[in-house]
Length: 269
Ligand code: SF4
Ligand code: SF4
Ligand code: SF4
Image 1 (spheres, helix red, strand yellow):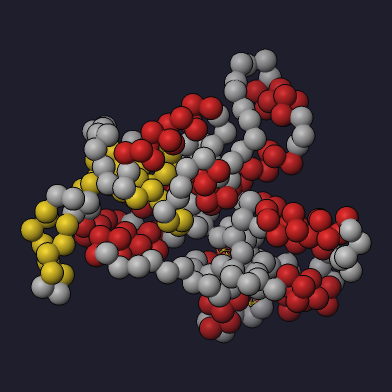
Image 2 (cartoon, helix red, strand yellow):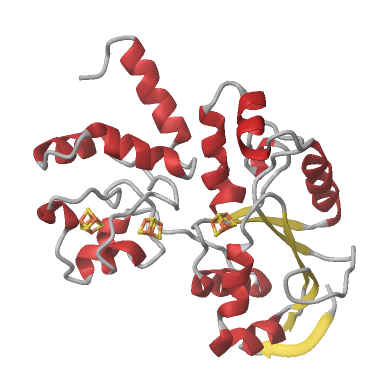
């Protein structure tokens, strides 16, 4: 790492060369970072950005930390991702598309991808294949969850990386953040919410704005699905509504698969 000539608590800190890349995505996560005008200059003083197509035209293949947004939906993306992995000391999956496949992976619901391709692109020759997160192809050092990511959280994580501090995601669910604010629970208003089983860290973004959580940050550690099903039954929310939400970003894929397996064996009530 290049020496930046600055210090923190008397220890010299280095200014890493950072690159941003996008695969199949809406680029909303990268936009979040640029949108943080209040602290953007401090952020830029912490790192040296050498690649960020959404913000600048300079390109470099010499970087230490790579942030990769988006999921893998084509062969050329897989190759590109592998090249990025080779060059980067630290590879960060930026946002739910990169971490879980994101909204893109809804396409995987359909068995016939040729049919999907025709419905979306007509007769245009476009390659498309099953949507996968980055971790299906390369080792991911760090995941930043959210659709989109929360800019304050990204800055905090980057600061920790630069200072060599560990990065810990909240293990508890969104409900903890929501109830701490004294919000009226949406279940009490008859509305669905995945807050009890979704990883916190967004500062209960949706419930604060009277929208139920859709689980964009994936499951909280030890998410209690059995208890959660009891809660939705008690509030007369149809299970399909919750399953639809759990499918939306791909973070609950393994839990859904496990539930289906149990259902097939007649082990689910
Ligand atoms: S995670 Fe959401 S905001 Fe980020 S690139 Fe994917 S779709 Fe866009
Ligand atoms: S609104 Fe959602 S996040 Fe908030 S307490 Fe109720 S279930 Fe939890
Ligand atoms: S409340 Fe849920 S859907 Fe909304 S940002 Fe937070 S984790 Fe994502």
